[in-house]
Length: 463
Image (cartoon, rainbow, N blue to C red):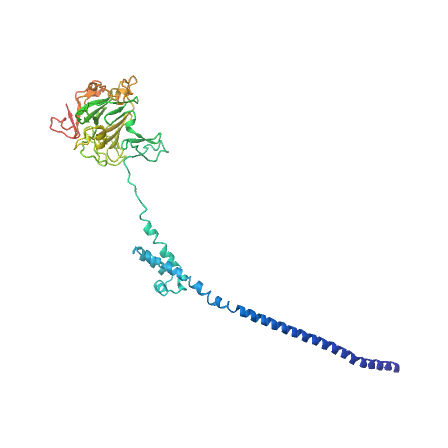
C-alpha cells in the first residue's frame, strides 16, 4: 500500500509541475487569436469606413434624382389628364345648336347614375375644374357626345323616288317568277311599251304585229309594215270577221301644199256578240300626261275606271274587261279568248309637228290612239285594212323595200259611220240587221243626234 501511495504522490507532483506550462501555452495561443481577431475587426472597420465613403459618394450622386420623382413626375400625369375631359366636355355646348334634343338628353342619365352629386357634378366641376372628379365621371361625356350626332343626321336620309308612267312590269309573275324587276320603256316609245315576260325586256307596242300607231303605220299579222292614210273625219273598217268587227275613226290636219293630209286613229268601235264598245281620245287643247283623256263607252253606258294602275273593270253581261295599264291615258281591253287591245292616248307635240310638218293648230293637240291588237279566234275569211293580213292566203303586194309602203283601196274599207258594218269587205254577221247603232262622243257630237233630241257621250241611237 505504501508503494501505491508513493506512486500516486509522484503523479500528482508531476501534474502540478506540468499544469502551469500547459496553461501558459494555452494563454499564448489565446492571445494570438485575440490579436488576429483585433486585426480582423480593424479590417472590417476599414471596410465599413470605405463602404460609408462609397455610400456617401453614391448619395451625393443620387441626391438630384430624388426630387424629380417626387415633384416633376406627379404634376405631368395629373395636369394632362384633366385637360382632355375638359376639352371633351366642351363640345356638348357646341352641339347645343339644336336646343330641343340637347336639354332633353343629358338630364336623364345624370339623375339616374349619381343621385346625391347631381346638382353639384355637372356645372361645378366644369367651372372649378377639379381634376379628380372629372376623370372619375366618364358617363357624362359619353352620353352627351353619342346621341346628338345621329339625331340630326337621320332625317335627311329618306329620299322617296316618285313612280314614273314609263315603268313597266311583267303582269304574270306566277308563270314567270324570275321576271319581277321593273323596266323603263325605250326612248323611241316612252309611253307605249309593255314587258315581254318571255324575254323579261320592255318591248315597244308599235313594233309588234297588230300595231296601229302614229300617222297610221300598221304592222300586219304577217309582220310587214305599211301605211294606210284614209281621210280625216272619216271611218274605215280595220277588221271584220264573222263574230267581230272593228272600225276606226280618223282625224287629221290640213297642210297647204302637201300631197296629202296627215291622219291618225282617234277612236275605235268594237262590235261582238250583240255588244258594242267605244274607246277614244278626247279632243284636247293642252296635253297633260297626268290628266286622263280616254273615253270608254260599253253598250251605251260610260265606263268609269278608277285612275289607278292595274284597276280592273268587268262588264256585267259579257267576259269583257278593262284594266288600267297606268293611272291615266292607258288601258288594256280584253275579251277572253277573242282579243286583247292595248290602248294609249297620246298627243302630237310641237316637236313632232316641226319635224314632220303636221301643221299643229292652237287649241288642238290632235290627241289620238296608239293601238296594239292581239287576236285569238279569227277565221280564215277575216278582212279589213289590218284583218286581211291575218288570212293564210294573204299575199303582200306592197313594195316592202320602199321607205313608206302605202296600202290603197280606201273605197273597199270606207264605212258610213263609226259603228256601221257596211264597208264592201264586211264579214260581220250581226251587222246585217237593220238596227245598226251609232255612239256619240264629245268629239263626234255634231254628226250623231237622236230623233228624241238626245245627244252626247255614251248616247245610242237606233235607226
